[in-house]
Amino acid sequence: MKLWSKGFEPDKMIEEFTVGNDRELDLRLARYDVEGSMAHIKMLQSIGLLSAEELDILLKALGEIAEVIERDEFKIEDGIEDVHSQVEFMLTAKLGDVGKKIHSGRSRNDQVLVDLKLFMRDELKKVAEAVEKLFRRLQMLSEEHKDVLMPGYTHLQVAMPSSFGLWFGAYAESLADDMQMLVAAYNIANQNPLGSAAGYGSSFPLDREMTTRLLGFDTLHYNVVAAQMSRGKTERAASMAISAIASTLGHLAMDVCMWMCQNFGFVSFPDELTTGSSIMPHKKNPDVFEIMRGKCNRLQSVQNEIALLTANLPLGYNRDLQLLKDIIFPATTEMIQCLEMADFMLQHIRVKHDIINDSRYDYLFTVEEVNRLVLDGVPFREAYKKVGLEVQEGTYKPVRSVHHTHAGSINNLCNPQIALKFQALMDKISPKA
Image (cartoon, rainbow, N blue to C red; front, top):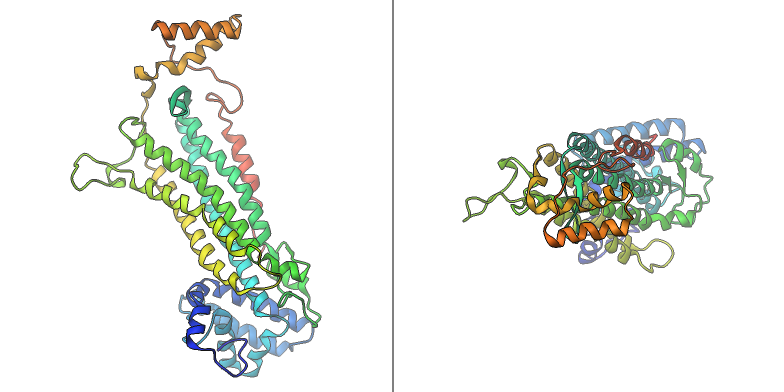
């Protein structure tokens, strides 16, 4: 059954090509299709297009479909195009003509849109919750290891003293930056398109504010054309947020891979969390973080794929947009999996405590010595030349201690302030529905 059927069936080859993976992907939209339909028919009853009795009958039947979905028993039957057709078919099969009234005042276009908005809103909230969990882990590790010094690098050359407190804390605050983009994507998703119909409104006196309240949206897409134009924009904003998070996580994964290498040896993991070699018995490979790095790099390409898919489309709905589900649905799932795996692995990370005692890190402390001389009254350029000459002549002797007290430095990590910044953003992702 097709919602647009006019008494003929398309060629089977055409149908298979145009439907694609929709039947499988639409199973993730089923609960949202029922929620959107419930709100829609309540609104239809309020404007006189359904009787109170018809509303009760439809709500009861939709509730039963919702229970089927919750039990993971909902299926899109052969010959039925998508989730919207399946729900309407089930209602019509059970209720007859009453079931057919559910589609009054809406098009499949805004039906799909509201499902996707509700879905993306929930998916972005799940991503945010996974980010929050990793953020808390990183902050905890930052505090736990705040006094353990490690080399800092520029150009992969030994540069200045750093600490594990700074390293873990840096990735925590970077996730706070990424949350800014996640909140922006969430706000775009959290607008009600229902009532825009095919993109040009309806001659029915639809109460769009009512469905906005019922579905817990913060606001609605007022202009009906703009509502249809939001398809693609929501996915693009979500992909940009995912890309930002993936970039941060990919950087972290790269650091861990490098720090696990014997040439560094800064961190390690229990044997059971590493993998081995088929011929080298000593190997303990960071495969989890290498796969994570690869997945995060791939996730950063999603926004380009969406941008290319939606570039220069003419106004109104175009079937190209159907392909967005193939791109964004797996992306949110994979992002959450990567975040959860990172949190799991970091629960078991082991930090080396005596790294800087190695003589190869003597020059980490040259800047400390320059600054000490400056504090004693020596002009900076003179102090710089003096220490530089000691390095050249091999007479430099490092003092392995740091005294960094300004905000955000080794001895003043500002983790509580960063936590407040993150929480303020997290508080903005809380659906009313």
